[in-house]
Image 1 (cartoon, one colour):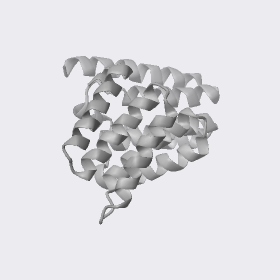
Image 2 (cartoon, rainbow, N blue to C red):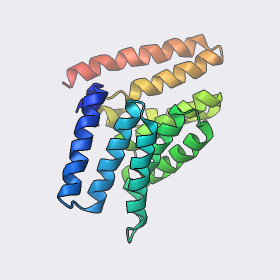
Image 3 (tube, rainbow, N blue to C red):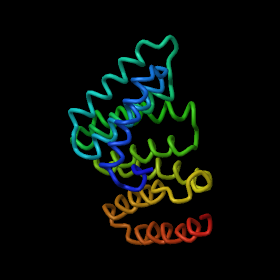
Length: 197
């Protein structure tokens, strides 16, 4: 909850407590993987990249010992590690991991928020690389899930992030009409969020 509200420090504190409880209670491995990935996200949010990478490495080690591939958790791990690399400016590594996350999440949660989140991360990489075509193409895929995303999470930041990426690309292309359209699209969705509260 604190993570979604933007309180990074409290989010990290509770992620760490959750991991500690899982470790002490001998929780199932996959539960620990989820907690470690959350802790890594928390460390990343406060800028402690070395600790974030350690948590991800530990989660990856646990996953490597599973009898069957855990696609959901592998995709979660790839997406989180991709975000770390993106923050560090390692765009090509981030791109590779985001694409792996998209493929995994597409398989287990097609059109759901986690899948859309990974697609938006691909869009952010495309914006950073100046790959306008890829950003627009991925954005169209994201927008095809718009109704489901709103139903799943009415206050989600995902659509705003999508529109922002598209507006950035259109601005770089000098297409002011589409920049305005992206702004209007965000404004048009805000009343929907309010009605669904």
